[in-house]
Image 1 (spheres, rainbow, N blue to C red):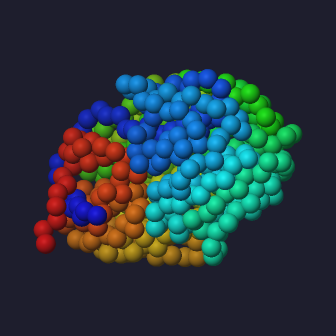
Image 2 (cartoon, rainbow, N blue to C red; image 1 turned 45 degrees about the vertical axis):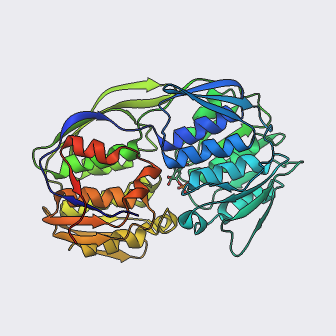
Length: 442
Ligand code: S3P
């Protein structure tokens, strides 16, 4: 645990890249592990969460090596995992936990999974229920939380599943279980969530058919027992990470920051849309295709923001970006209403309460209205002068550091170590742009 203070400094300027996309990195390792042959991954996110997935896969018998900048995965083929000899600690990573539970649940293996205090508090029932219907058994104490022992099924059953909550992790867990089930596994989602699993499975050779439903949802059909073939993967910069330097530039007068090679999959870019609604000066350039994913360069320039109303149906495309969106709302003029945020209560921390408490501590009026968060923007720099309890949550830590870059007095976070979960090099990158961080005065 180490505290860190963020205080206002100069404007931010520069051209940068952010580390690789976390969701795509987890999947590239998992699909490479389930393919035959060598998958070569460029731009893998080398952060705590993804490294947990890589070491879990090694303990299932998969060879993963780093050769210079490239990660080489020698897969064991669909259904080829071995039972791991030891307990697997997935750290802070909900994506590793839920996707690996899916992969394991239709293979003839037993694995004992656990995680840090944050992951052990997060609901796993949402994957246990459908995966049990596919034939897996789970042992756990209490109410569907880690630690969990997964007993994969030797005779898996494909299912058709109607998603009760929008969740790419749950959808992906079921599809990954469907790889080792005979026949068709079908997932219906009322709101479309990030589709990296579908895109990447296809590029590894699986037969995945996606139909758009009336109202914008999706029906995803996967044919079981595909022969997955090793494929090279280039991981784009993570739009969720680009959000921090991007919003910081929008808030600090005189700033002009370009972030190159960022993933722009439309199921991930709800924050950018929201910021444009707030009047932000954001320019997209060089939009291009990179291995099936849209990428581009984004320039963020300072301009005063105004409050906005973010509809609930935008939540899946900016689900990880509400903490930083709330910071933008705090600096904007007028009210910002972020709607339909029930899912934020079960992220790496209870972000719903954390956002409200953190903003209030920094002198910003913010309140809950059922599942909405309502923020009265300050129309400029809020007071700051607060210490934020980040509760092992990397996104809360980075968001409140961005807050402190523009507040009247510094903002301190209680634990900067959590940032390593998704964004190694965050502090150096932000300092290079003009950010000002240091140990708090005590
Ligand atoms: C992710 C899906 C989202 C997101 C998480 C990554 C993924 O979680 O919050 O950071 O890679 O599939 P949910 O599926 O719980 O919404």
